[in-house]
Image (cartoon, rainbow, N blue to C red; front, side, top):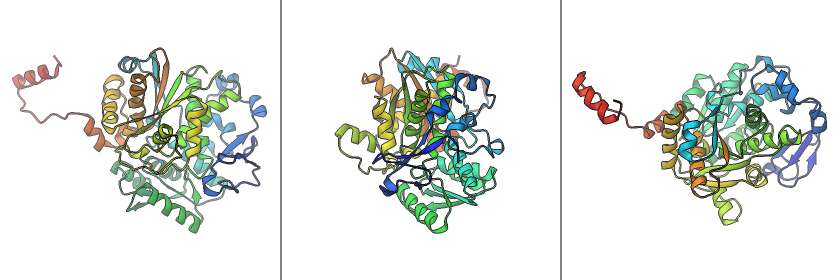
Length: 415
């Protein structure tokens, strides 16, 4: 057990539990009672100082180990996760009409997505628990990252995905040697089967909406952003949202750095969903409790009709004084092309949904042109090349003739 952990707090009833009292979820609220890991922040203040980070040469997410709820026994054996580049997007900020824009390219993690942050922690916690098999359900990225991290550390992995999982991600899972279970149904069906199997066989549960430690990995992306901006984060941070775990982690990272006195304020969180699957946005607009929504979006990583971690997502936007927006798939596809041609970064649909969200937020006056923004590209475009092709116009083969080439180049404005 990490020595800085005080216990766990339920996101629904707010009750605190000691490490001895708690299981994966709240003993009182059941499965819906997702827990937050709580630390001794007074003690951590003595350790996690700006000097600590300035002198720490471990440029990966493992530099935050004291506040990740993990033991450090096997950290040196793990794949390098995190410390992905944060680019000043000079061209894109002009297109979107904001004062300053940064792009955090988390698609450069080992399996190509930000989910490696959670899966790395999951594998370490599985090893701590003495587990031999780790399992999860996912629309794709959590699945492939879990298989990746488990393979490196010699654990078996059983991965459940809905039938619509992109071929690139399914291929990754198989290539990493995991047992792939392709369920004939949507994400909620895959999640249900994974839960039943985990309960029956006693596998370690990596499901982010159940396991409180997954957020401890996810939050490191915002800690990196804070560090890379010299502990002066932007006014806004835009995040694509599916289950709610990632946006909850982004908020928690900033909130904990604020508690530790490392940053002076918490950025406003812009939660972005597709109009084809927008349960959080609909709830925020109607004021009604979260309801099941259709999963009618090509952005598979955020195609979650029944979010399993709703309170952390709702609190992330509410407590940061942020906002929710939804954008159609057509705008998400345009954002793929926009990011590629302006900044040379290839993001998958869910990875660039937040960029489409920034555009809409600026148009609606939610984000002011005088404000600064960071967006997180959560997955590499090569994870979903089929949808990537929809963002471009591919030329037909031409005759190897210089005159024909000359005409073609003029039409394209290349000469």
